[in-house]
Each structure stands twice: as structure tokens, then as C-alpha cells.
Image 1 (cartoon, rainbow, N blue to C red):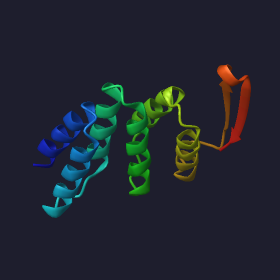
Image 2: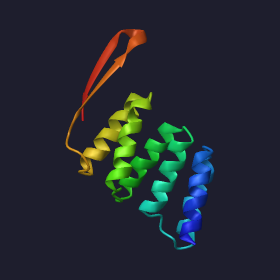
Image 3: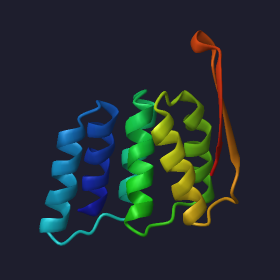
Length: 124
């Protein structure tokens, strides 16, 4: 039954149905199926494949917050998506989360905002 939940989670995420995704996660918990790495990978993949990158990154961070460590392929996929995120605070939170989870070593994020002729350097 967890496999069915994970499939539905991915479909909801693909359609950017954030509230439905959260409701299904809560339903899983209520029925005794603790969301695992596969659940969060399905959510991340659904959001990312649906073009909802910021929601995908939020789900990745939530996975880490739950104490679940993704495999290297999912981590690499998330890192490849980060350049599409427009929210600087989310970029910083993502960087801080992956460093604290010891998935990567500390790194520097260099952001250029052409419209404002502004450069930002963040040490994560």
C-alpha cells in the first residue's frame, strides 16, 4: 500500500497540488505508513518533473528535516535544479541543509542579478 501512496504523491506533486500532497502524507501517517525516502523522492520527482522547482526543493529540505538521507542521485538532481530557484533564501536554506546533513562539503554560492547589476556571494 505504501507503493500506491508514493505513486499518488508523485502525481499530486507533478500537478503542483501542494495541499493534496500534504494531506496524503498525513493520511499515510494516520494509517501507520511512515513516509520514507521513496515517498519524498516521489514528491521531489513529481514537483521537479512538473516544473515546480521551488516546491521540489522544499520537499527535499523536508526530507532532510525528517532525518532521511537521499541517495546520491536524488541529491545530485536537487543540486542541478537549484539554479532555477528565484528565492535566494530558499537557495541558502537548501545549501545549509545539505551541508548539515553531510551530503556535501561547505561551498560558496555566487548569484548574479542582471537587472539590478548586483552580485551576491553566500558561504554555505
